[in-house]
Length: 317
Image (cartoon, rainbow, N blue to C red):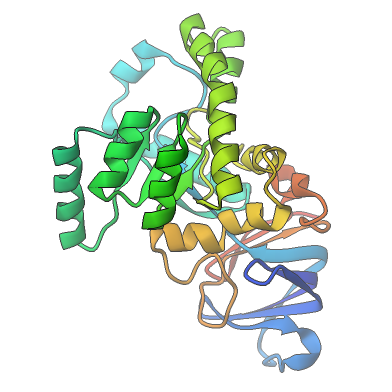
């Protein structure tokens, strides 16, 4: 099946440039052309996808989600009585909501807390045998540094960074995945009576330090990859993270890169985060210019078109 997507604009995160009167051609799930309509010949049997009025860009990537968590606060009785089969079904619903928000690829973070140095090194060595990378849920400064010394690829959360930790990240090319929105959702759930008050107190205590740490990392040039910890908050709400990243001083194009080109490199997925020829036909369309208005990526209702592997999975006028 060949599909030709006609759009007002095509944003390439790699260059930051937007092509007008754009066309993306997808054949058997793979991109064969992405650029101006005038520069391409569309096969006669291609199905036309009308994305007029939209700017299209690669599907977004969230490097840190928890698909089996509901994102509705804590209910210990429910969690203790939920069988694994039902957890799987929850993940299917969560994936659908995530897709509708424009996120066509995710990495489920499961549980990977930073441990003692020898344990971390052993995990990294074992993972490398299988061609895998290791992530670490690392919040405290000592845990962050142990994780970096042990060779993990990404630091998740990074609440208490300092200059030495940032230098270690820069020297090793490690990525930081901030999950800025997660403590916001803890507070919201607690205010709604869906989480204990102590959880909200902790979240309020860490937000100032968390934002200061991430701001320091951004200013230093640490690689920032997009991640939300969704599952703490509701699935489909992932895009709010863009606005928090922008508030810390990241340029809109860098926010978008964090969820496309940088995210793909960080988690080692090929053919995503780009619409270059040969990549997967994962794209989204929004009614306007996301470089001028990041709120276009912050809410599912603003994402009017989603294609996954060349198939239209969401379309709204």
